[in-house]
Length: 128
Image 1 (cartoon, one colour):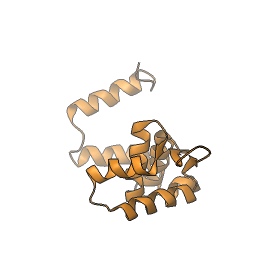
Image 2 (cartoon, rainbow, N blue to C red; image 1 turned 120 degrees about the vertical axis):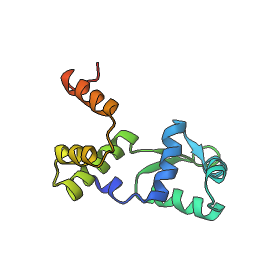
Image 3 (spheres, helix red, strand yellow; image 1 turned 90 degrees about the vertical axis):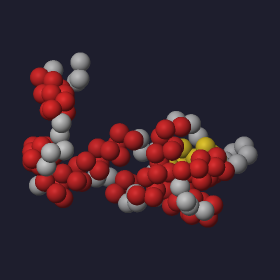
């Protein structure tokens, strides 16, 4: 896991998800307006989360002309890979096989999931 994504809290991930979904720089006001619709956070909380992400180097901002606009430096794919590797290391001794086995034994994989995984690996892992 990179130092950048290692420290992202669950609340900060919500801000990141918004920025990843929007795929455009957003002002603090735009971020606040969006998150106020989906969370119970207040303006101060949202501002704090954005500034923490900026200070951690996970997002950056442009403020040359007008209000600062924030955008992610870490992609969603990078974050998901880091989180997956961290979870594998902590819970499954680094083994994806152990993780898949645990999901299957716990009834979390449907027959469709198993078929999709089988096809994924049969096709060389590129999904084509």
